[in-house]
Every structure is written in structure tokens, then in C-alpha cells.
Image 1 (tube, helix red, strand yellow):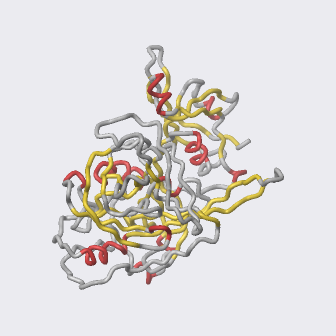
Image 2 (cartoon, helix red, strand yellow):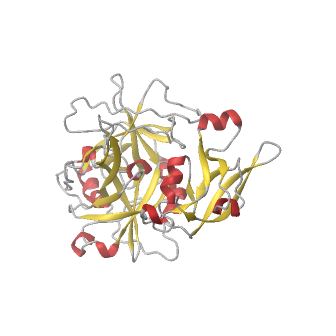
Image 3 (cartoon, one colour):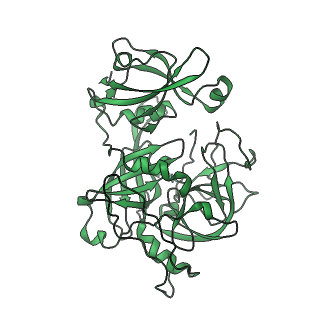
Length: 416
């Protein structure tokens, strides 16, 4: 996904967080191209950004009729999402928020970039961005958290902050840049017992049953200040935006930078969407978008059950042995090619050559993770060591102009 997320600093008075989305096929009910969308997950700043201040942002009479999120998900074999049973409906937003907030977290993405100064010198600059996440499963060793891919991409370190303001390091479980989804993992042994008593696993709802006009509640780490709650209605369903490989829920509930990856709830307190983007132009008000949970369940389950990834030092990272070129959506449509990374050259003696990857192939996945660009490819290779064998899914060109999908085992070489 070719997103360019705007930087945010406390000095900015004009909240015009605009980004362009491009390269997606037009589908039904398309938002006009003149309307620019805003990615909400990354509130960028320098290292000294505001600390996460989690807390219950709403008050009011507590009516113990709303369904509470589960404290634990028992799993046998693969980890699964917990589906709600359609509990008692309440119009008291404070009750829904009270029960749901323990399952929503703040995510801080710390990255280091190289910056050229006025005199041509290069120095490293530490950047911090904030987003949200939803606790979706727990097993004996890990707590799994759902968020947007753009919230965690490019990270050097990830930190999760819970409802009680306790913060814990997190690792990538799986990412899908095409759907803008990611699952990250926190080790249970790293979480204090007092925190375990306060957090909860969210219940998943059925977004296919959403009706236009139905009330919804958004919870997330708006502007990096900690959890906040907004409410609105479902403005439309099955919306499409350039840059997203799925239909979206449109809502007028306020969704702000930092809300990306947070929960969109129905009146049962169930997650029916993952907040991801909003429209931000002067002539538009109240147009936010969420990824429908029902459409994303298969992708999320796949990400949940991948091996947790730990980033390796640069000298330890594996080397595939190709020269990559991005295949954009426009190029894919023009030339009838799959999106991914085009292999323009294969290095002699490399693992890619030994596995049968040839010039003209297009890499679309590594170990089940979607590869949509060279950036995705390089980011994934940071998790695999030289000498390790990984499964690479490629699209192989055939004589009739079509492509055949194959998965090959590639033994990674030493990074050069």
C-alpha cells in the first residue's frame, strides 16, 4: 500500500493530516478521487512525545447488563478469535466503554532514520509514532493484539501500553500490507499479574449484520494522549478507497490520528471493525473508515498463527539473492501481472537461484506474509537469519502470458 502518512508535532495548529492513496482498482460505491484520505495510525514526532495516559475516559451510572470482554481464551491447537454471543443491548455508552476499554491498547512505534543535514553529513534521528490495538487472543505464552500494518511498519522497537498504563515490549506476529492488518505479540511472562487482572480479550462481532444508521462506538489512542471514546452511526457499508484491498465501513464517529488499529464497536460491545482512516479536507466532515472484522477474520487468523518474529542485527539477516522491482497496481493492470516484487535479476550462486527462482518471477509472499513491495520484502527479511530456509511464494510467468503460483524453499545466504 502506497501510503504517505503526515507528521504530527504538538506545535502544529492546523490539523490537516492528509495522505494520498493510489494504485487500487475502482470498485462499486467508490469515494470520489478528489477526496483525500488520512492515515490515522501514525502520530509522528521526535523522541520526546507525550506519554501514554491510559484511563477510563467516560463516567456515568454503571448498569451491569452489557456483556463484558472475556478474560482469557482457551486454545487447543491454533489460536482462534473469540466471537461474541450477542449479549444484552444497552444504550448506555459508558457501560459499553467501561467493558471494552480493558481490551484496547496503545502502541508506540520507535524507529531510527538516517537524515542528511545542510552540510551533507548523515546522522541518525529517532522517531516515535503512536497507534492503537485490540487484544484478540491469549494463550499460555502470548497475548495477541490486532492493529493496522501501517501502525507497526518500519519499527525498531514496539511498545504496548495497557489500561493501567503499564508498558511492555512487543514483537511482530504477522503482517499483511495489502489489507493493512497486523498482529503483534506480548510475552505473558513480561506482563505483571496486576495488569493481567485488568486487561481483557475483546469479543468479535458480525460486521455483515451492520445496518446503515446503527450506532457504533470508536475507542483508541487519539493523538497519542491515551484511550478516548467517540460515538456515531454507520454512515455506509461496502465503501472503497484507493489503497485498500477491501471494502470498508464508513462512520461519522470521530476517528483521529492515533486511532488506527483501535476498535469500532456495536451496541453489544463487540468489535465489528478496525479503525484505520478518515477523510480530512475542509469541505468534508465526519467521514471515517474501518476494516470490517468479518471480512478480515481469515487474514487475522492466519497472522495470529504465524511464528513470532524477532528482528535480527543487520549482520545476521539473510540474503535472498535477487534484484527487486516493485509491481504497482497500475502496472499490474496494464500488463496483466500480479502485484508484488518483480525479480529483475537473480544473483549467481544465491539461494534464490538454487530454489529455481528466475528472472521475471514475482514474489508475493514470504512464510505466508503478503509481499506487496520492496519495502515489505526487506522488512520481512530482517526476521530471518543467514542459513535459515524460508518458504517463498512466487508467480511464475507462462508462455500464454498467465502466471502460475508456486511455493519454493529458499536457503538464505549471508547479507552482502
